[in-house]
Amino acid sequence: MTGPTTSAPRRRTQKRRAILDGALRVFGRVGYLGASIDMIAAEADVSTRTIYNHFENKEELFSTVLLESSTRVAVTREALVEQHLGVVTDLESALIALAKEWVRPNPDFEDHFRVVRRLRAESDRFPREVVRSWQEAGPFRARRALAARMALLADRGLLVMPDPELAAQQFMALITDATIGRAEVSTTALESEIDRVARAGVHTFLYGYLPRKG
Amino acid sequence: MTGPTTSAPRRRTQKRRAILDGALRVFGRVGYLGASIDMIAAEADVSTRTIYNHFENKEELFSTVLLESSTRVAVTREALVEQHLGVVTDLESALIALAKEWVRPNPDFEDHFRVVRRLRAESDRFPREVVRSWQEAGPFRARRALAARMALLADRGLLVMPDPELAAQQFMALITDATIGRAEVSTTALESEIDRVARAGVHTFLYGYLPRKG
DNA sequence: CACTAATTGCCATACACGTTGTACTTTACC
DNA sequence: GGTAAAGTACAACGTGTATGGCAATTAGTG
Image 1: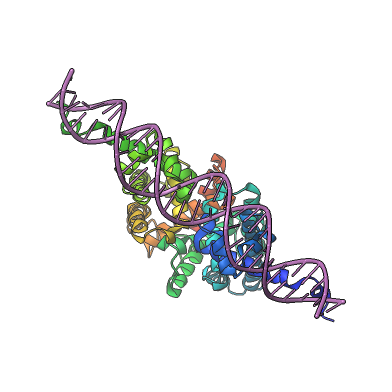
Image 2: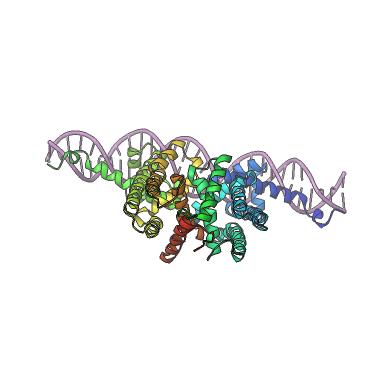
C-alpha cells in the first residue's frame, strides 16, 4: 500500500512537474514574450501538444509557474527570518548574517528571480490578477515576516521603529537594491562584494551617516 | 541669414526627432520586443520606410533613443544635486527636498523610466555595449554627481562617510526602491506617500534605527 | 518654377509563433 | 495481455513582424 496518491494517474503529474520546471527555466532565460511554447516543450522534454493538454494557454502556464515558484521562495525567506531574528543576542551580527543570505544568489531560485525582475518591469502588461496574486504569495509575504520580527525587536527596545513595514522595506532596499545597483546589471555578485554591501547596508540601517558623539 | 544649420536639410532632422520621440513613447509603453516598427511609425506619424532610412534596424533605433534620453535625464539630475546640495544650511531638509524631487514622477521622463525598468530586467538580452553606454550616460553619471557632493559634505564634517559612492547608492536605494517597492508596481505614487517615504528614507540615511541617548 | 533629396505607399519575402485537429503510440494498471 | 488514459508527431492555419525594393510624390532650396 503506497497511499491514495499512487492510485491517481502517475504519468500526468510527472509530466506536469516537468513542464512547470522547464517553463520556469525558459521564462527565466528569455522572459515571457521571448519564450515560445516550442522552447518550453523542448526544455521539459515533452511535446507541445502535451503542454496544451495541461494548460489552457501560455498565459495560464505562466501564472501557474509564477505562483508556485513565488510561494516556494517566500517560505524559504520566512524560514530565514525566523532563523536569524528568532533569538537575537548580537543584533548587528544577526542582521548582517540575514542580509548576506538574503542577497546571496541562491542557485535554486536563480530562474525565479530572473522571472520576477522581468515581471516587475512589465507589471502593467500582465493581467492585474496575476500580478496581485504574485505579490501576495511572494514579496508581501516575505516582507510581512520581516516586519513582524522587527516589531518584536522594537518591543524589546532594541530598535526604534514607528513603522515596521516601512523599515522592513528599507532594509530590503539597502541590501538588495544596493547589491544589484552597484553593477546595475544582473551579474553574479562576488562574495566579497556581498559582504561589503551587506555590512554597509546594515550599518546604515542601524546608525545612519550622521556623526556621533562618544 | 539664419545660420549654417538652416541650410542643412530641415525635413530630415524634423523627421528624425519625430521618430526618436515616438519610439521612446512606444518603447515605454510596450517594451522593446513588444514594440513593432509599424507602431512606432504610426506614433511618429511617419512611414515605416522612413524609419529604415534613418536607422539601420530596430536595435540601432532603440540604442539611439535610449542614449539620448538617458543623457537628458542625467543632466537634469546633476542639476538637481547642485541645486539642493550646492549650498547647504539645513542638511536634513536639503536631503528631503532632493529626495522628493528625485522620485516624484516627472511626466517628461515617464516613458524613459518605463524603458529603463525594462532594460534593467532584460539587461542580459541586450548587447553589452548598449547596456554599458546607457549606464555611463545615465545612472552612473547621476550617482557620481551625488557622491561627489556628499563627499564635500563629509569633508565639512557634516557626514561620516568612508565610501561616498556606496553612500550615494544607498541613498538612492532608500528613496527610490522604497517608493516603488511599497506598491511593487509602477503605479503613480501619491504625493503624500512620496513625502512619507522621502522623510523616512532620509531619516534612516542620517540616523538609522538604533536607539539614541539624548 | 525647377531641381533634388527625402518621404511615402505598396508590395513582397521570409520567418516565428500560438494554437488546434488528427491519427498513431506509449504506458500504467486490471 | 488488454484497455483506457495520456502522450506524441505532424501538419496546418492565421497572424504578426523585420526588412527590402521600387516607383510615385512631396517639399525645401536656389
